[in-house]
Image 1 (spheres, rainbow, N blue to C red):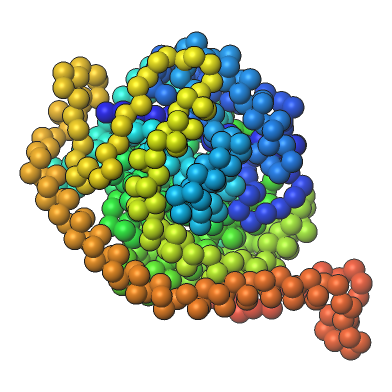
Image 2 (cartoon, rainbow, N blue to C red):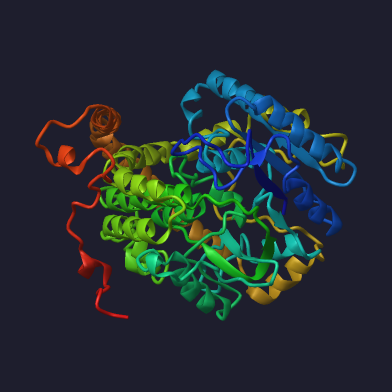
Length: 530
């Protein structure tokens, strides 16, 4: 086993950015002039004796890339005698893109970068693959490791087969807060009645916490997720998902024939900064859920993908993947506009973009992901055997001398799918627990491998044919999204004609955002109850 920890860290000019970009808008960024939460995270790794390599991905707002890189490298240098740290910043990524262009795969730039949650995660997958790591553990910089056996718990069951012969290649633990709570603390206020993500999530996790240690998962925690090499070599993150790239990865894994697992004995302390950005986060969620719904609908036309009925993910996130998502958005925006006086304009705007930009965005970009994913395995196979990339992500990005660790060589041909090489003579707690977890034979791995290989061959042929059909549609969608934005700007800048509905409202009237039919039956909720 050869695991690595990957930590994305987000740096901006301010704690809360005033600019907005669908993909490059983050829940919170650390000001370039502040230390932020990263030193606390690295301290917890050091104090708990974590000895495996650590990769820091520096996501910086435009204009502060150099300052962000200097800041993160200075923080990492303070730990260079005890932790093996590599820093991947904008300079390293620029060199990576240049090398990729030399290899004839320059089209990956948008999908593997330091812009957006999904593309940043993909960069972590690429670095791990190029350096020969077999298990990747994602955590976030606002978290604290609390136990010395953190890595052993992360690797429990990973790369193994269940007693039914199902491979465990993607797993997630859970967050706890400073009070030891693992449930969502979202308010059950009346204005959240149609947007009770926290309530529905708590129903799911309450059951998962009382299930066997490893159970099928409906969610993934991006800040506590472990992915085996045989999963990240096959399935990428979606670079165009606005947020929630972790849950989206679960959907991707399922569509391509895999599954994700929940480990109810693996946890991490989550201590995010107190940043008030409710309206902006809601707007990102609007983009996210409309995108996910469109993605599942689009996948129905792909004969190579497994279908995911929303109800199969009940109680969460299933309801947010149903056809009623648009109605949920509008009602929630209206109720929060009434109930939350802090940012009424932000919630009105969220309802407007749901009807226009968010829908057009989803129609355009979800198909792009499937095209990107089509070539993922081949691209990764090309990148991970390139000696220049090994050097770039290896010694060139290392901070200080650090513990000397050999880079594992990766063969040009992929190893047998699903095969996990056992470490002879290992006495770690993980090995002892995995013996109790089940007896996994090479024969079982061969059976799982044959099934996946047959699906891979069929998927490649089917996907190529399907995407040829959708190539023209993608171009039309792109033009449509751009036209929607242009029309919106023209509408907002052009005064309404006399006698129209808009003109009669008066200069200071609120826009008519809710001229739609409420499909309350689709939501399964009646207003006369409770």
